[in-house]
Amino acid sequence: MLSNKALKFLISLDEKTRKRVIADFEGLACYPFWDRSLDIAMFEGEKHQYRLRTGKLRTVFKIDQVAEAILVQKIGYRENVYE
Image (cartoon, rainbow, N blue to C red; front, top):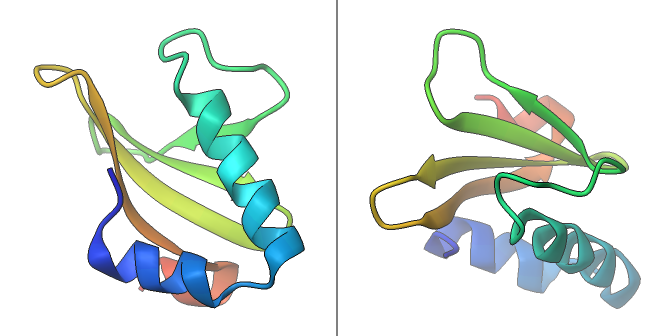
């Protein structure tokens, strides 16, 4: 699931970058057995909240284990996404 903000940012990307981000999203679908090539890190002090690095872009997402879903909260460039 994508938040409205994340969806708007994804649509605004050029086609090549958008395809790379979407390909990384597909790698997340195998939770908890993610593709090892993905650069994923868990936020300190936050349970089930992670970031995914795709080049200069960062995707902040949360795992809802009850609904068995991944909720993409933000997508953006490193300097802006953590605000």
